[in-house]
Length: 318
Image (tube, rainbow, N blue to C red; front, side, top):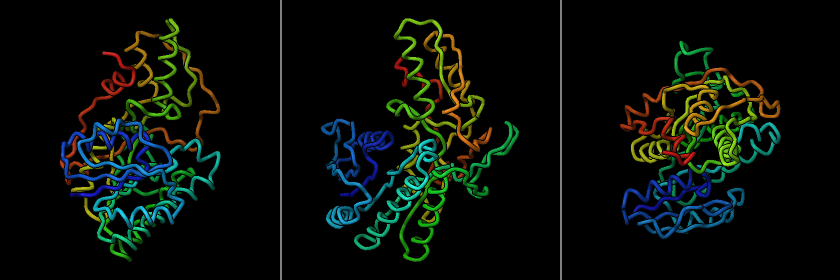
């Protein structure tokens, strides 16, 4: 029996990860899911032993009790405040939360199950030094780090904490720098999901033209389908090298405007884009694309979803 502990299991990616583990059809898996909210996934569908506990990772005493009792073999740390926009509204809260919970998780593992293998999910926001256009080289794991928003700063601190626990305490930790990802079920406070919801609202209202409120739609980003991302996480947990960082990305860039146009086309809608100043983020680079080569080479991972299929599934159109 392999025991998995998943933090942030009630979130968008956490639910997809639970479903992915279910597709393995391996009954010799036992999962303890931790979050402040319950996963939306239908528990009876899992072919493995599953238990959920509502725990705030800031509560170190309850976390210690859960980990000491369960003694996981594998731990996937997804939990975090993950909105860059929200981090500007509460910089202290975002940085404090994300650094404190990784400290609580790693220290608890060190004390109660030091041989547990950990996947610490991080963010490509720590780079924030993308190029100017499509001719710029993709970001690789050795590219310089340059955090320019509170969320990224907290994620960079997480990386330093992880490095310390690997080097000084010998914990077995693999880390990701995850680029933008989206898919069915993502919350509307993220860009693509917000676009999709506005387009669906227009379609359901019988409108021929959707008027969208957006930020800067000329930005080019590297988007992956979140279902591909959770496969990458699973493979990295099994095959990634301890102490190493891995880009999780598609290696392809697409503008936010192109995403809107593609989704609108699937619904046979015209669009009018209006820039909402409240949706603009300071210091946003124009062009960010990553290289997934290290991930591919060491795990065999490849993306299986093209952007149009992701959008079709989010819009539920065929």
